[in-house]
Image (spheres, rainbow, N blue to C red):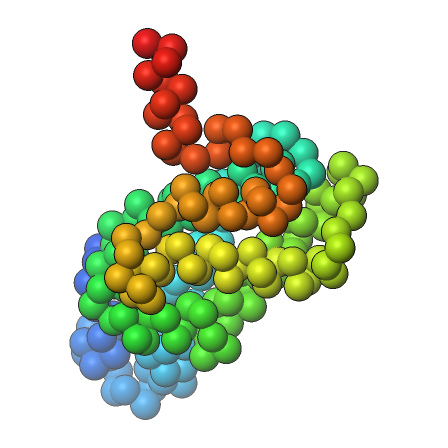
Amino acid sequence: MAFDISRKAFLAGERVDMQGLASTLGVDRATLFRWVGNRDQLLGEVIWSVAEPTLRRAFDAAEGEGAERVSIAIAGFVVAVTEAEFFGVYLRRERERALRLLTTQASSFQHRLIDAFEELLVKENVASGATSLLPVRDLAYVIARICESFIYSDQITGEPPNPDKAALAIAALLGVVQKKHSRANHDTDKEVRS
């Protein structure tokens, strides 16, 4: 119940507030902490509960095989994240906490993200017979860092998030010739066909 209320608030762009949550549930904060951990732990779980199905949808929608499919899938995930208004609201409202929870060991989020990327890499390597110069775990970590660099660029450098650059960087890392991975290329293709 506490998790569901928190997830609903997060998706609505509202702050997840432990005191308010405890009041809504009719319990004291100590009880709430026993149920869900501290606020950072709860936020990490809530964010992963949104990210994980987003990743799965991007993976399922990606065509091709091997490095090309990995590149397309992760680019799709980055686009979905940068276009999620509720996520942008959270990043602007809680900049430092968000970056700490999403990009460090302060929560399990990054570990889970790397696990998901590693799973996709292994699956596609098996399907295509491809190999990598880097161990798959390290490659998944580098891909996660590339995604972070472009998803959180407004928080890190002041530049707007740029999923197209993330897609290009991941494709280059994986040795994929960029085709229609980016929205910019896709929009240009549409204009040419019109």
